[in-house]
Image 1 (spheres, rainbow, N blue to C red):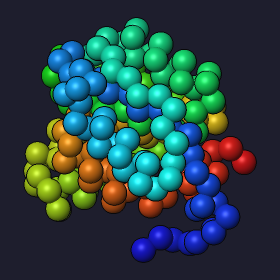
Image 2: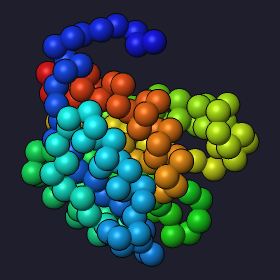
Image 3: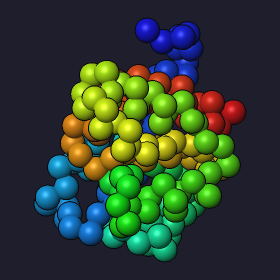
Length: 167
């Protein structure tokens, strides 16, 4: 149940950018990015960008800054949030944030633990926050993790979060 219902905020349709961070995926093999796109469109949101970048801090930062400069309401990233040496998404995005929404990572790990992967949830470093007027969510690369984050946490509050970021 949502804490409150601000009807005018919860009906805002957002302009979204999807950024898959992977050394191996292509647009044809990116099931997680495609799933994000499908879920957003089902809610009548607009997907303006969908792209893939390597697990490289400079490439990730350049893509995120370009999307922020293009005034995206939300950027949704998938991939690069684990604990391997190549997983640099969090270290790259966190310094760009004006405000971090620590509750997203906490809730994602809680729901992952209780409903999905059990103690393996401790390996997740999901992140969310605000860069200027743009909200950014960084999710793990698996389709299951993306589905959980999008359907349980992000989509139910997305319009309200975007409204809060721009007021």
